[in-house]
Image (tube, helix red, strand yellow):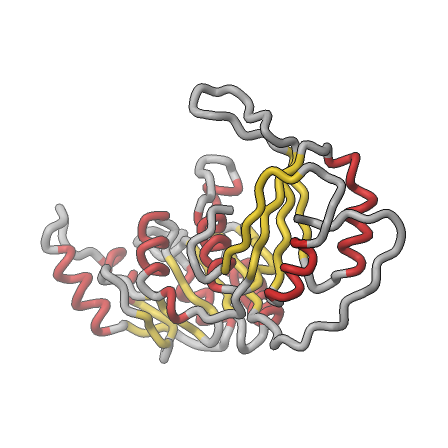
Length: 278
């Protein structure tokens, strides 16, 4: 249960846990900016990163323009630091606006070169396609010179330039490629408790602020209940859902188990190292 008090609360000492890696997602897609396509990749990646204990700090959507890609990749790479991760999605196909590989290469002062294993896999795949290998398709195997790669089930690997991971825009491929390489992304585990109450957000806002101020290492989220059951009827068993999240399991429990005047209907704590539905 979450402790809701009136008045001041004693502050918790500063956490001694090691800092978590930071991450950013760069969606490269004119079609997202014009509303033709709904971006689901950043949402899925955010859930993966949370589960892995990595702090996603920014999601940006930019056009398929080299200047925008170069400047954004540079900025995000510097922001997350050497221990962090930048994920780009989109712009690695066979058409004129697929310029992500060469743009990321340019951001780091690199050229591009054919990746032999990728080119071989591409040639095999194109034998099954009408029209076979074309110049447009062949250029999909031009990766940033000297980049590292992570193997996937496809002929397309994840190209890695320093802390930047280059992914396609197709959601099913993004999910498969990252899932098969999930262990590569290492963070600091997150613990979560969930509290549901009949109280409205406005009724407990001041008290939640006091708890949050006393526990700066814990993130307390408050969400209005808009859920409905399978028949479309609103779930009236609670009005507000509270999440208590942090990397110090002891402190999460301290916030979670103390007495409270709100009506508690559900409470649990789970590690982020297991799948969590956000």
